Image (tube, rainbow, N blue to C red; front, side, top):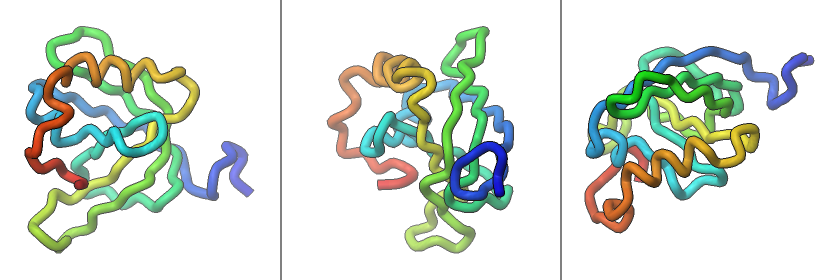
Length: 119
């Protein structure tokens, strides 16, 4: 039994910095509940793993702590030469603060037809 709750996955801390809007656009997952981010990584994760994300956006000095869970996995050799990594769904804990901050940075880019890491 996992004392942290969830689906039996393990909790891990992951630091992730995004320095420009095009990278943020490619990583943002607005189509999942509470929003989320695709994190390029070669580390092995399972669906349902709990993630504690320390997110640094653009030139901000402070990192945003965001709890979440793995809801998407792009393995090595995925179709279309997609980046290897995981999609992390933000939890309800921050009441949408991380999603709002990302959406503020991406204002005007949301309807772009540019491809992202996931869709």
